[in-house]
Image (tube, rainbow, N blue to C red; front, top):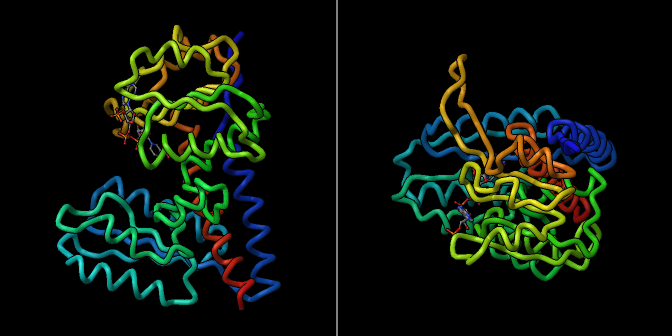
Amino acid sequence: MAAQVISGKKVAKEIREELKIETEKLIRDTGVQPGLVTILVGENPASVSYVTAKGKAAKKLGFNSIQENVPADISEENLLALVEKYNNDSSIHGILVQLPIPKHINDKKILYAIDPDKDVDAFHPMNVGRMVIGEPVFLPCTPAGIQELIVRSGVNTEGAEVVVVGRSNIVGKPIANMMLQKAKGANSTVTVVHTRTRDMAEHTRRADILIVAAGAPKAVTADMVKEGAAVIDVGVNRIGTTESGKAKLCGDVDYEPVAEKAGYITPVPGGVGPMTITMLMKNTLKAAQVAASKK
Ligand code: NAP
């Protein structure tokens, strides 16, 4: 039986409608309009398109959206000063520095300078720690999007065997941590595999929920997947260009054969991708709600 396709596009739209209603309520009740600043260093085309999409999504929800474009040769000191300016601006609730930033700047120094209460990407060690001890304020956007997709598709996580392929700080480690929390939408038994794992398939074949964030096309093939499993493909690999000149994308999962065997599957594009920006919006709204409650 073919898998049920989980549409991230559809779920993201649903959540954005909910966020719009909540934003209107926040503005009506407290006068606080969520404010998001995105800082773009240089003109990397992928970064430009991510930042543009984030700004557009924020405006659509009724947020105050500011885009700061700074030259690629900005000094670390000046970039830190810009972050500090928005740390001290009470009309801004979320600060996002688009990665990657040029090599002459220590990216950790910049990310860790963001006020943790405005750290809507949730990369600051304070927010990572809060997540690990089960007291998150913000959850990192891509992992939060993955968890929403799983929960909203009605996939049971309670006691489920979750296998995560990949151990990056952005996806693998945080989603593994989130799924093992003693909480709704989690309570799973989690295994993490990576390039040093002895027999990866031995683990993935046990998975009720298989989350793949390797950045390697077809890293997961049908023989590595259990019949009926929920397969979440986080990978975005550029494998050429379409006839219209757009980047041709594929995930980390060998889609067609795996879809024949799995119970649920996310497509690439249109799966996890649209959820990431949506979760950024959710975090910005949350930051504004927290700020409003302290007024
Ligand atoms: P990353 O930092 O490169 O980490 C990849 C991880 O996967 C590493 O831990 C690596 O193991 C492991 N790995 C690589 N190839 C493997 C293989 N063949 N078998 C088993 N493990 C393997 O990547 P990332 O930032 O986590 O991103 C992963 C993918 O998700 C990328 O394609 C990225 O573009 C995509 N992504 C998508 C979104 C979205 O919004 N849709 C957001 C973030 C990332 P080692 O640690 O042993 O090297």
